[in-house]
Amino acid sequence: MSNQPSIDSLVGAAIAANRRQPAQDRSLRTVARILDAASSLLTQMPLEDVTTRRIASEPGLSVGAVYRFFPDGQSIIDAIAVGHVLQFRSMVDKDVMRPLLQQRQHLSAFGGDPSVVLDRMIDAYVLYLDAHPDFRTISFGRHISAATKARQASPRTGLPAMLTTFMVERLRFRFTPELELTLNVASEGGERLIAYAYEQPTREERDVVIGETKKMLAGYLFSGK
Image (cartoon, rainbow, N blue to C red):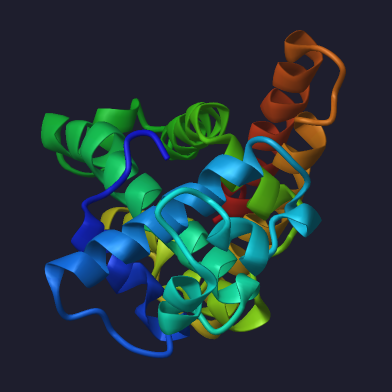
């Protein structure tokens, strides 16, 4: 994968699904090679063809090496997805949130419109999807396991966490079960609509759908609140 996090970060993201935690540099490099090989294959063929044995046939790997760290293909897919979520979250925090929040406190940095943050987050997500076709394949095909998705979609991680931080700390929303549900619905709906946007035949039509998605989510999250 291009622009990947460090090997240690990739391994850390994979730990939950791994049979054992790598402890030596050679093990770290092996895990990184497995994830890189799987990511490369995801850009070349349908996900259902990216089997554990197909990954193991890549140069420098073996079936034994793959199964040493990953019990099955799903755990590899989950590790790749989690690595991307962590990388995207870091990118948004650095390139979107920090510059906005460093300008001024609260809403003055957004011209009084909190949807500006949502708009920029979605723009950053689209750029990230464009740059990482392996993540598009996993995310749009809804191939992340339920357990991993629950962890990454919770209010403590991923894009919902960034929205939660913004709405609770900057807009002074009170964190409640109702707000948690609102954020989860927005995240799920936005994910499906962006996948629909990428199904459009032209980039222009894709961007129209993304624009409508922004308006719908902003109205749902901020109108009347």
